[in-house]
Length: 458
Image 1 (cartoon, rainbow, N blue to C red):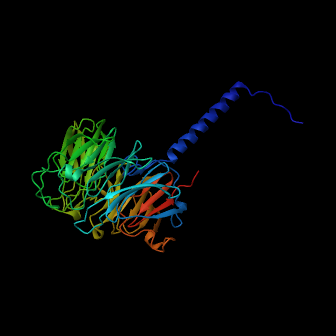
Image 2 (image 1 turned 30 degrees about the vertical axis):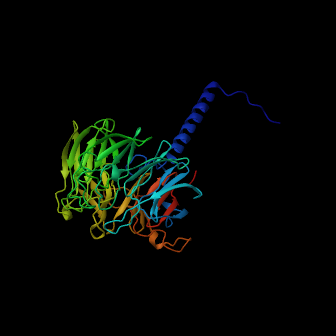
Image 3 (image 1 turned 120 degrees about the horizontal axis):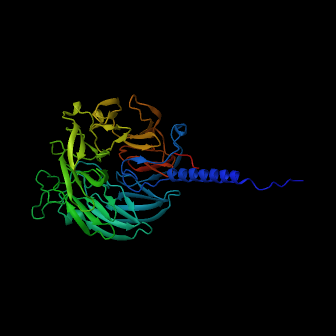
């Protein structure tokens, strides 16, 4: 015989309701930070950071569980991931192809491809350098030969396309087009760097090329129609970004000759700051790093880094390297460093012999420590850990610590055979930064994409 209880007192009922509400809020927040898309180069904030949580170093035995591997075409860029869709931009034969997959099953949902004519001057591969960008149901791709295209995410239908090299008389750069565009509101911001059409210059003869005010071109993302253009500079390999500087959105473009900052709404140029090694073949490739009103520019050839502080829309030097390169405090090549609690973590150096991973105090550039691996690497930040991918396949989980190098897990993916073909999981070059989306870690090498279960499913 069961005894029926009477109704709980009002005070107790209220406490139960409050406790259930708090629990629901915690669970909701947990889900919100648990899954995050990676829809553009360097992730949702454009700085190589993920807001997801739940990384467990004990799962690295010797690496997180492999979900699947996928063969790739020729390219350098990583995937974009939105919901269940994974988009990869590669070259197959004489065509550039954007392919949309179901990220769970690897089933191909659609593909779009177009002919491409490009041969690298320095014998690097001939595939795309830029990653896909997804926004508002649209997919944007920027090919190695300057074709800028927009497709429908759901179907892969081509909505518009334009040949920027022909339209803006761009003198082909040493390594092709490699600056991933940036979506800002209803605009797609694109690094173009054209020259006067009546003064043709042979490919690669950048010392003869003259800019014509089209360093950055903003187009309507729905139609591709030009909205504005600005900047007397040639293009580089650094992706465009928009940051809050002095309380306002500020476009930042690290172009061939240095930085241009502008109002992304109006196209008004705010300031410029020259920063480039004097040698003809030098390039600017890392994205500017910001902390508050401070901007770090860094290149790997001779001049190294400079930290600027912006006041009243004018840059002032806080500190700068002066060269030669062996005396520089930090020299980022194509990998963008990450700031954690006022300290910069990233790859320093131009080539393998002089490259290392280091920690630098951002405020004054003082080097805190160096990891002398003699290889270049890329870095992503998630849940208080740095995921570092070396160009030969070394994968490390590092705890940011300015006092010492703290590697908590590591493995060499070049020494692990893939079950599909017996070849190494990753083969050099591994130049794309690690991508994190919905608990999974995606890393790529020369011809393969590997998906790891970084965070245990809830």
